[in-house]
Length: 109
Length: 114
Image 1 (tube, each protein chain N blue to C red):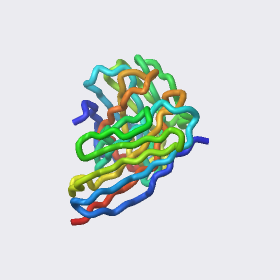
Image 2 (image 1 turned 90 degrees about the vertical axis):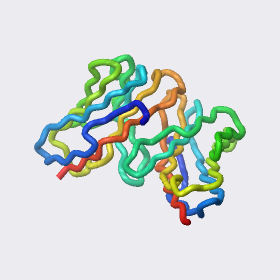
Image 3 (image 1 turned 180 degrees about the vertical axis):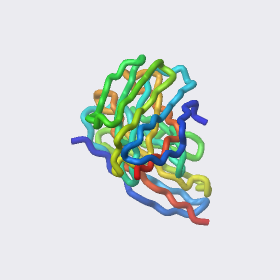
Image 4 (image 1 turned 45 degrees about the vertical axis):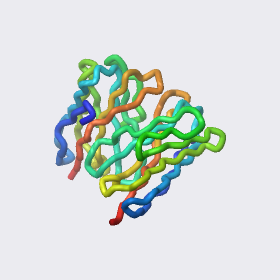
């Protein structure tokens, strides 16, 4: 079966750095997405990785290793507004998104 | 604001009621999706439409009935629901279904079935 694993919850301090991991086992691979979802709001697109390596976008970076079935989302200079759930999703060979259950990130002052 | 709107934002209904959820996208996309999001569970894909044609139905019970009159609008008709159907229902759209296109989501409808 297809499976996406990510931690249920993480806590970090304002101004610090946090890394949210995602491991996957899917039928084929057409890219990995990260979304941010604030409580009661729409998931919003953060990043897309299809090749190995690090993609940097401001305070957020996303890394992919296809051989290891592994990705992480790195958030730097954490702000209180970064408190949200972060969803990892992999597009399989049928171009269907397989979703993780999300990681709830709590930022403390 | 992602360009995808959903109404209503909140809905409470009894098991014998009939109601409809509405989604509209202003992005010029050709594919639209309905997802169910339950607490601490992965998003569950329910239905996919591409160029107004339903391309996927992921074994969804018949008490959920989708309708896509055009590429900009998507409805989910609900009838005789069960309490376990209480969840956040999310609509999304993407440029096309066939490629690795980013999906853009609406804010969802929080449904409570009594």
